[in-house]
Picture 1 (tube, rainbow, N blue to C red):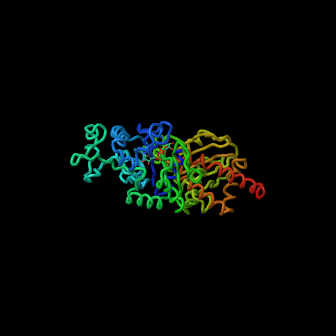
Picture 2: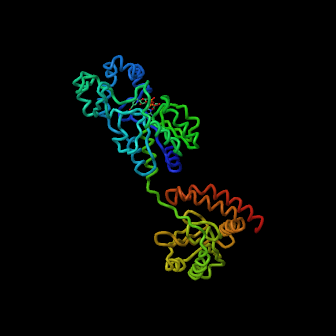
Picture 3: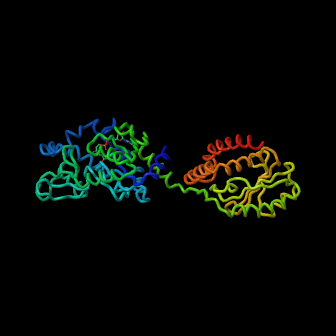
Length: 419
Ligand code: NAD
């Protein structure tokens, strides 16, 4: 399924990522709403509010102090690292995060929009002084859990957005702008229950973009998501990154080349000379024999033999022409030769003249030559699969169902027209 996510990311750019607490649970940071989450112990709405802070800042720090300690020790996990790498590769434009833990930044993400603030700084409500995390941590200890401003002794407030606070305008405006531009909004590890961030997927959908969700539990947008994966954020994103960066062995499919018939004629003369009297008839076959059909640039030759046998001298003569002999090579009733150092240039299929293989080759070629619209459709299918397949084997495998159907039509038609 991560391959499906990789495809969505590749095909829908720009991709913007929206993360929640679930992207950090695999770094040992509990989320809010999972059974082992923070809500199992505390109701953050009672602790993480401006009202609560004004009434009793020390109580709010009883909630935050252990979290500060934990967050400074947590390390980014594979999900954070994969997102940073996808950004570096140009496949993720930005990460909009509800998290305050700085783990995206520490993993190397450059464009991180923190819509709920962060633990990066804490400010003094009395004198507005701002203190960096490294300064605040010892103040927490010195203040027995509640850090006091060294300048005016007021209890500092972490620069995270409390439940009853407005979101930083710049960050939320940017988040909406990104969601609107996104062709894909990828939600990772968020219950989408905290507003207004939970509305970002709607913005993307309304603007015609797609949404994908990687989350352990359901979210409101699942029914409208192009893809929903219930899995570990670290595993899913790591696998999607691997699928996006695996070094593909490209398959070359090129436009029809008017030189192909000439190349066939020249080669056919050499093959006829090498196989001698056994050859009844020789023909150009396969995709390079169909004008207008895109193809791998390999000339296929069908050599119709009086009977399906070749002696050592004939094989040696073919080898002298640069061919490798592979015998039946998985297809009974055919003797197969191929030529070309590195990329193949020619294949020769020696078959019994007038036998089934001989006619199958002809049926395919003749059908496509007289049905250019089907040839065009086949060419488009080849190109699509070649663009995605990792190597020839996958290309053949993925093309096969289409070819089987096409051939069935060709065989029926050929039966009526020729047999
Ligand atoms: P949430 O707790 O409401 O939801 C987290 C979601 O992540 C859950 O639906 C859960 O099923 C899923 N999840 C947990 N672990 C996962 C994993 N390994 N892989 C995939 N999915 C996983 O969190 P939220 O939606 O971010 O909203 C809660 C608020 O909590 C936010 O405002 C955020 O600021 C704050 N918060 C932040 C942190 C942090 O900074 N790390 C931690 C807890 C809460």
